[in-house]
Figure 1 (tube, rainbow, N blue to C red):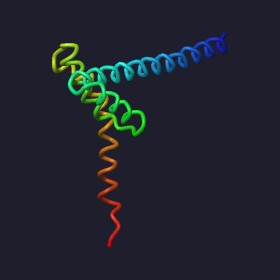
Figure 2 (figure 1 turned 135 degrees about the vertical axis):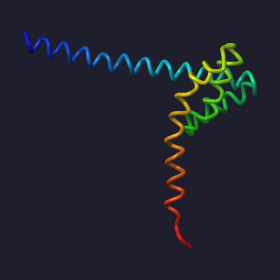
Figure 3 (figure 1 turned 45 degrees about the horizontal axis):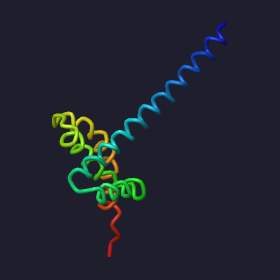
Figure 4 (figure 1 turned 120 degrees about the vertical axis):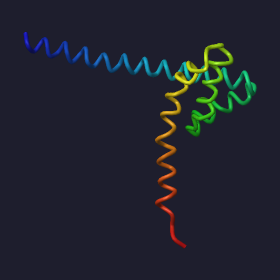
Length: 112
């Protein structure tokens, strides 16, 4: 009986990881879509597709993050604080990489 309980617990815990992965993937896709809408609304579809190219080819997410805010506020008509809340995960993923690049440039200078 104990072995069956352990197997069921393992299956449930493994399934929760899959469910969370799907939820996070869905939230990321929604954020990309809202970023595309915001950039398309303000700058046009060429810039929106360019921002998608930057995101997927060069891994530069900042334009889509800013576009997400404007997509929520201007396109959907929601309040500014909801735009900040929805765009905040993008900023939180950008900051560690930015700090790393700054520290690398400060501490790995070659002396001439």
